Length: 304
Ligand SMILES: Cc1cc2nc3c(=O)[nH]c(=O)nc-3n(C[C@H](O)[C@H](O)[C@H](O)COP(=O)(O)OP(=O)(O)OC[C@H]3O[C@@H](n4cnc5c(N)ncnc54)[C@H](O)[C@@H]3O)c2cc1C
Image 1 (tube, rainbow, N blue to C red):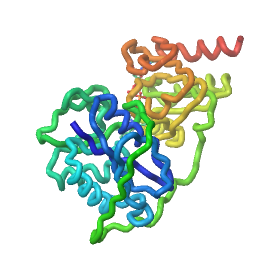
Image 2 (image 1 turned 180 degrees about the vertical axis):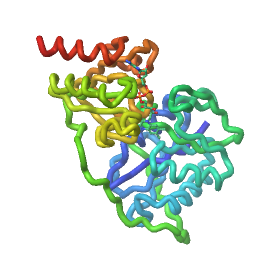
Image 3 (image 1 turned 45 degrees about the vertical axis):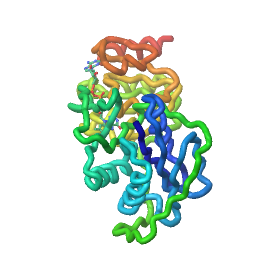
C-alpha cells in the first residue's frame, strides 16, 4: 500500500497538519511520499521522498495548477491513496482530483482499517465505515484525528510542469478582521456546549469564568445558535487553544472540537452522559447536569 501525501504550505510556512498525514501513514504502515508547493528553504522534517514545486512560480494556493502537478507525481508514483488534510486547500483539490482520476473521494477520515475508512456522520454523533469501490482513492483526513509525526530529512525532488496554463490566479490571502476574544493566550477557558440548553444558562459559565479569571469558549452549535459570537468558537473552524485548564461544560467531544483544544494542559468535562466522547480525553470527568453542577462549583470556589 502506498500513499501520496499532499503537504500544505501557507504564508511561507509549512502547515503543522502536514505532519498528521505522515502520522496517519506511519500508524497504518502505509509507504508514503509527499508533494508540496513550497520555497526552497522550507523546514520539513520527513524521512521519505518529497516532490517540491516552487511556490514562487506556482503560488501557494492555486487548486487548478496544483492539481495538475499532483497528477504528474501520481503518474510517477502510482499511489493507492492520495491524501489531503480536511482543510479548505484539501477540499478544493481532493474532489477535482478524484473526478479527474475517476477514483472514489472519501472525506473527513478519522480512522482506518485495512482498506476501510472511518468517517463521522449525523453531526459526528455516529461513525460509519466506508470502503471505496474503486481500487484507488482520494482521501481527506480530519484535523486532529491522527498524531503528527515529524522526523527525518526528506529526499527532495524538484517538480516542474511546463506548458500548464492556469485558469485561476492566486492574488493574496485576505485575513478576517480580528474581533472579539483571543483565546489562544488564555490560561483558563470555561467552554460552553449545546448541553447547557439555552442562551440564558451561559450566565452560569460566565460566573464560573469570572471566579476563576478565565475566558469563555464555545462549541460550534452554541455559535450557530447565536448564543455567543463566533470569536468564542473552539475547534477546527474556530480557534486552536492551549490553556492550562479547559473546563468543557455540556460538550460532547466531537473530533472537530477536540482538534481545537487537545493541547490543553488539564481538561475537566461536565456532561450528563457518562459515555460522552469528551470523557476519553478528560483528566476529570464529572457526570452531572451542568446547570446544577456549575453553580455549586462556583459557590465552592468563591468560598475557598
Ligand atoms: C466541517 C465541520 C467543522 C466543524 N467545526 C467545529 C468547531 O470548530 N468547533 C466545534 O465545537 N464543532 C465543530 N463542528 C461541529 C461538531 O461536529 C459537533 O457537532 C459539535 O462540536 C458539537 O457541539 P456540542 O458538543 O456542544 O454539542 P452536542 O454534540 O450536541 O453535545 C452536547 C453534549 O451535552 C451533553 N448534555 C446535554 N444536556 C446536558 C446537561 N443538562 N448537563 C450536562 N451535559 C449535558 C450531552 O450529553 C452531549 O454530550 C464542526 C463540524 C463540521 C462538519
